[in-house]
Image (cartoon, rainbow, N blue to C red; front, side):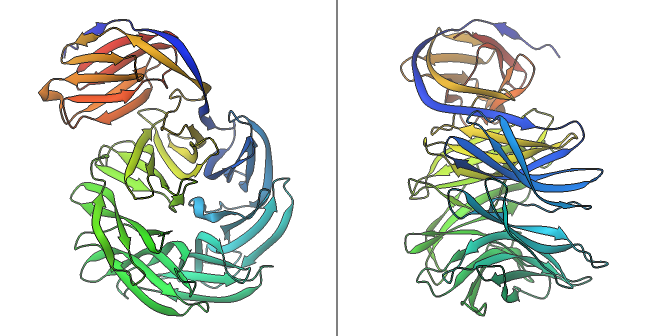
Length: 484
């Protein structure tokens, strides 16, 4: 099929320099696979927590990086012949400027059982302050660790014995790692349950475990369990409809709770948000996010920002067969969307984000990995406060504010630059509504995309580096050049 290529040039020039820096980097070695599940800012540096593995075994540790994402050192925390299991942000808890504690899955020495929970407390110099494994006959998985009012820790996750269903699981330990109690919880005996996040209860009378459970009449549901300080169940509730629903994530919102869970309808999967009171009753209407993509998943847990807003990381894809892109969502303190960004290292890559953490400049750093194609690579993204980033893989820069001229048009696409606010408006013909507007760089890498829900769309342009780009919708492509 013949595709019209319209070639034009845009002339850009500097007007000011912004203070915020950004980067978009993959990390790999010649012989190992790498994955990050958490990242934290420490002064003008970053700490990335995760694992690397090769034919010799699995290595859990942390990387220290400079302000531009360059690795300065790696500190090993644990080695195992078999791979460790790491899931997301909740497995790493920052206790102070220099001390952290992590709850991970260690491969058990017991025959037929794969995982025990391991707790490691360490400082940024790599000193291990506490390391302990909690062995059971069953299989255990840790999803989040939090501090408790008595100075100890509560770990939430999942446990399962061979040929049995999985249960929501809580493990309480004291300040030096001593076992205090454990307990399991289940929505029904017909399917698995698991906790993916945990928060202190409003009022201080216990904790809320949030995750999923199987309901015999409604498929999988978001599932909340309130427990007292001894791990005894006080009350519980499930959320969702007759369709399958994803795991519930919970955080405290003033004197309420902020709950997010997934809805799976037909071929679409998307998150919804609900405010609930201390009795787990909804307050106000659900907020649906079904316009991000056909498939939108989230990592664990919800992150509260310095402005009392919220952040969420995960992935999105056009459909169940498409390569997923990393996704970051930012919300106000009232749970309204500030922005949603999706990033992909290549159109042919599978990208996932497992963490997003606010940074002191108002932006955030997100951590995850490029899973496919092999080898798996660690992935870190530094966004500014408005969600801007440098889109070319392995870039780092200080953002510059720019202006742009003139109007450009091609078959079905018309571009209207706006020098006043550094945006670009694209007008399309009606037949392109419902398709995806995409920008590719000169190497053929997808650097930006968004679904067209109307025939006019406006987006920021100050994140694009010098070079040639292709703006595409369906079979129509416009080429333009940016020159700083």
